[in-house]
Length: 136
Ligand SMILES: [Zn+2]
Image 1: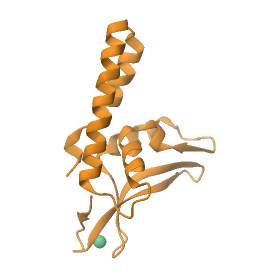
Image 2: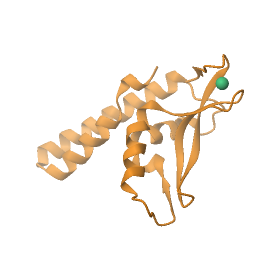
Image 3: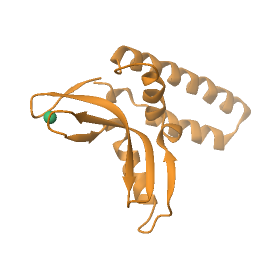
Image 4: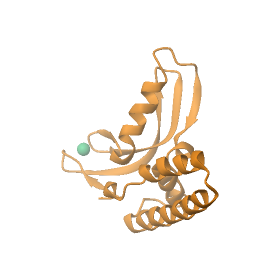
């Protein structure tokens, strides 16, 4: 899951804590980091949702910790895949994402068969977080 940095070195995908307004700790956010030039870039698969999350905190947020890997499918998958591993491998991440997608689709079929609209909507939003175009 490494990426080439503009400086010519390699950016590694790591799970980091983002501190917002010095109060809110958003933990386990997938970020590309370059150890050479120090450039940081939030993983494109979660960028939009991080912006939405931060936007929703308002101008005077209360101090708290938000475990991002529990609210975002991508962060959850990357977090699980990084457990006990030195670096994240694309094949492992791709497989984990596929398995999770199938799991969510199975659940969606169950939700659909029992006619639970709220559950269906929640699963749909989770599925939309897992867009495979983000694995590059
Ligand atoms: Zn760099």
